[in-house]
Image 1: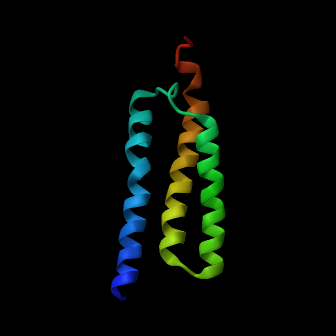
Image 2 (image 1 turned 90 degrees about the vertical axis):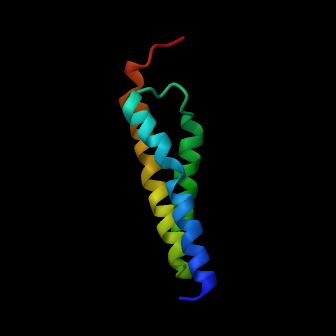
Length: 90
């Protein structure tokens, strides 16, 4: 593994964990009022496209990173619907 490939995997790892604090906070508080469903759907859709691209081009960091972000964004979308009734409307 050369230095550029290591850099790609490092970037992939860092990008993958960006959603973890939001997922944890949402799960912990059960509050979804500040989650924007449109943005989450765009993230989910874009990561699916990136995974397909990564698979077609055989770029492992792209596949790994976007698969993880896809799963985390799907979890946030699930939380948005699951916890929506618990969030008081303003």
